[in-house]
Image (cartoon, rainbow, N blue to C red):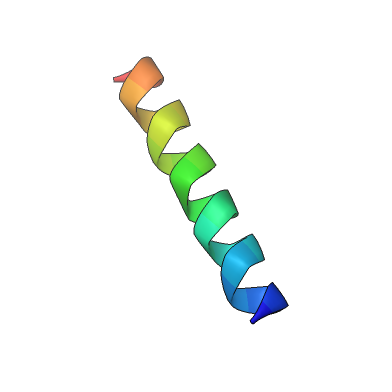
Length: 22
């Protein structure tokens, strides 16, 4: 459960970062 939550957060942050850089 905890690991899944962390992965989801990291993925969301990564997508947001890519969106800003694009």
